[in-house]
Image 1 (spheres, helix red, strand yellow):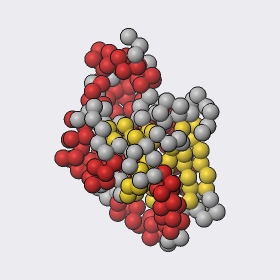
Image 2 (spheres, rainbow, N blue to C red; image 1 turned 90 degrees about the horizontal axis):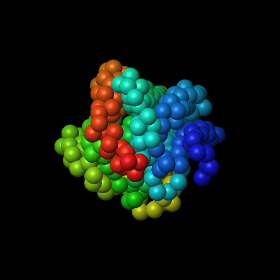
Image 3 (tube, rainbow, N blue to C red; image 1 turned 120 degrees about the vertical axis):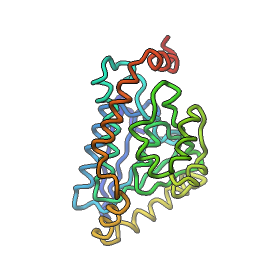
Image 4 (spheres, rainbow, N blue to C red; image 1 turned 60 degrees about the horizontal axis):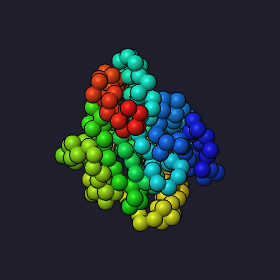
Length: 257
């Protein structure tokens, strides 16, 4: 695993056209602004590369796929403009996935929380392990999953989203996420998942690029307004994060009182 206190993003494009994007942060693969911006740029770069046939999105380690927003960075936000800018980082990543001309497969090897659920939802197809339980904890800290909600609702529907966001402190199992449509396939072990993932990626990479691009457009029909919509949602979260309730909840969570 990379030993980098600031985290990193890597991109490797195989000879067969599988572009693997991997992200890492020592705090349970959480995503501060710098990594969100780099991840957006990397997804866009991979999608524009003529060698890329399919994109694989993954994180490092075995226990956590993505813990969502960086709580340390959230505590440093001092005005609503900075708050909106931070949450728009997730908006940019989701929109980069949406706009990419290439099919994106997500590999979810462990727990996904908050923005991590949004990342999984922004992929076109998602493989996970039984350890990949999910939680939207935003309501418990005084905000809500406003930015990622369009992507999550698009995958699992409003009733399942309601359960996920209202049960803000409860994890839902990987099998629940599979039944609701967030995950397309669930495997017992990481090894089993990776074997299936590699087979699927190679198969997709062998298909007609124009057919894959046409499918991508169909999968995202009706989302053309998301640039504006997600930025509006980011502004809501950016305002709420400044509240005394949220600041105290974040400090309590991090043990910094």
